[in-house]
Length: 350
Ligand SMILES: NC(=O)c1ccc[n+]([C@@H]2O[C@H](COP(=O)([O-])OP(=O)(O)OC[C@H]3O[C@@H](n4cnc5c(N)ncnc54)[C@H](OP(=O)(O)O)[C@@H]3O)[C@@H](O)[C@H]2O)c1
Image (cartoon, rainbow, N blue to C red; front, side, top):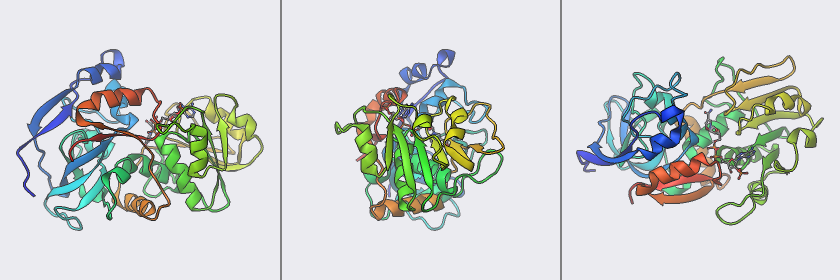
């Protein structure tokens, strides 16, 4: 595959004034920059579609500088789907022309001395570590572009896989007959978690509102369509009152409201676990219930299992919309409103 020397890429130039991500978004520019060169163990991917995740704009606040100190200017975005264009030294198992998807990884691209990046999904070409890249196995970019970051997060939250909490402990171990509560089932992570839990025969309750999906369906009905056994309208009822005493095994928190963990003891069985991906406050486990918070670990093994579930028709990644490459700032702004129903995607090339 012929690789050009230069490409178009959206770049962010500084943390937002007073920590406001909208300021960074408003000052992003579509630039012509050199195509990155894959180093040892890396691949260059021609990006067809990219997907937005809240972390893309959360980074712009500067509040995550301690975890992921991005260096400006950089190309934001982590989720992408495309075609391998070039192999770095020592890469085996992937070939030029392979159709792939990947979460390029927060720590892998944005930390000081990180091996790739910084970041890079919102550009025509991006570099990723080969051992984070999964082949698409005949599936389209649209089927898979929203899968890597949200899918790996949900998979690791409820089954652990390559994920670990900040103390190195395993995360969820959901199995048949167990009960899972997903807080925020209409979030991309939540929608994937509901389906993953059903694949192992768990009972699933979730919270959602009657707000509409892009198809005009109520998010409550959408949750049922995904397989949720019980949907609680969080605008009208408190999940802790509705499910009190029901002995849930696991709560997966995709919302991060600080008031949720203190209520969990009403719903969790003794020894139950609350896994959050969005509550990074100073929270401690109790004698009866474990609180765990983590950052997903991008890796090809877990992602390949998820691709296989999509291929088998057991998992569908909801897509809110696909916008043109010129609309990257607009779609990041939409993500900040927390109102999407599924993945917000960007057509980077055809
Ligand atoms: N730690 C990690 O490794 C990790 C990885 C991935 C994501 N995350 C974090 O996890 C969170 C979810 O990410 P995402 O990409 O799944 O989000 P998303 O798809 O952008 O979430 C939007 C959805 O959340 C729903 N929602 C908003 N407030 C809610 C509430 N109080 N209760 C129930 N549903 C609510 C909205 O529905 P309504 O219309 O009802 O408001 C909307 O459908 C973000 O904070 C993200 O940064 C962390």
